[in-house]
Image (cartoon, rainbow, N blue to C red; front, side):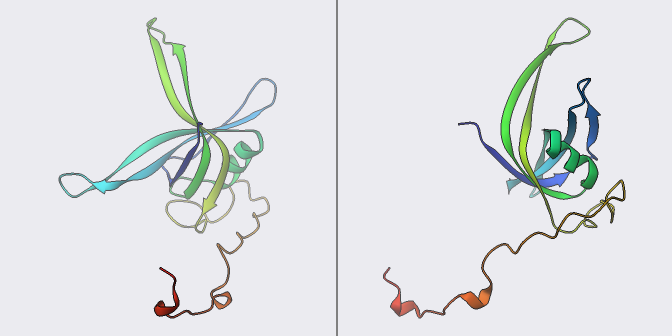
Length: 144
């Protein structure tokens, strides 16, 4: 199974590209904080390249900007190419199946509007059930 889920901030604006056959592509880098701090007490980040295609790429190119927090779901792909000096180079990247913008659009360095001033996406639904749907239970009543 090859499944990746990342949550981080865009380290740069998405780079739009269209293939000769008219397929949209978007490539960008997501900065993901590591779980632990280093010896100096600093939490480092990994900068992970992401590629999206078709409608997912269109969404990225239109609504995402540097600094925006995103969730990326996809798979890892390794590809190779021959460099100009004749050596073989390898690239590891995440191929995105699903991308969700997190937080508000004006968080981080992002712009307050879509880059082409088109319609805004619908607001995200609530993350879970409302708090008033829960019944308070005493600890003594729990079976564990």
